[in-house]
Length: 350
Image 1 (cartoon, one colour):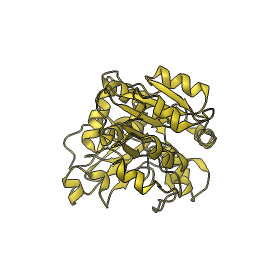
Image 2: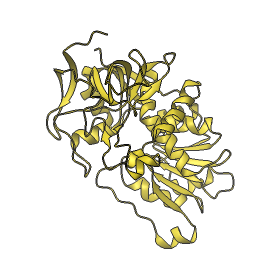
Image 3: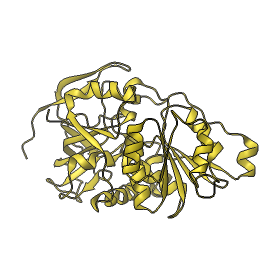
Image 4: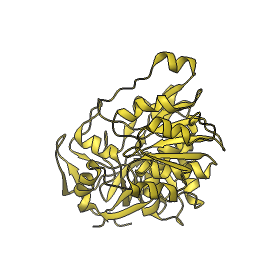
């Protein structure tokens, strides 16, 4: 395939700086890497955290953000023998890992101390051509839509992993905090596909409508509820609250609140990463009710394959809107204002 020397990309030059539409060189894949012509990339709240330097983790600068890129393999290194030029593939948050540490050997590669993170420690998918470690790129069937699958590569995999970590089984109840957002809209669908009752928690009539259409069994609007804790508990048949809580919030309060309505012996999975936030729960209540509070990060390679399989079978459809790559700054503005329902996907060709 013909590969140009330069490409268009959205670049952040300094921490906290604006994204700029620029022409940059097309990278060349190393021995164990592939070069993917990115057709579409989802936009995640993590991308906003990355450009603002919100987390206690050094961020590459200048930076090309993005980590939900779907496209076509156009070049590969000499050590790559299990993916071919012309195959469809996706670049995820976990761009690569060492594959030799104790975490990688036990399929916990997201915990690798040497992990490379797309759009954070290495350049990501807000460009037309991006590099990924061949072992970690998602394998995509050519019969699925690249624009539609893009949000699954982070948002889908992340919430699918959290549901697995929660231990919730078919017939049980899980509260999704931030259900009307990009991750939440997918979490609701994974719940439905897995036979789990979902309680959507978010604000606004538009988000209520969307959540119910996507399979939520109940919805609690925190902007009008006089007692969110009581309303979440009341949504479960026995009034004891959900068996699990997936917290996707971008502020600290909902993380504290979850411990008040989760069922005894339930699990709170913390997924959202609000800057500077802390977890807090009453020790007595947590102990005597045997509540489990844990973090849930991104999925491993097997989680990725499973999450994409749900999508390929038509069980998951990310609500999304496609905009041009040049419109990324306005997408971030909408994200800051919490005015995005579902997911935004950028078309790198415009």
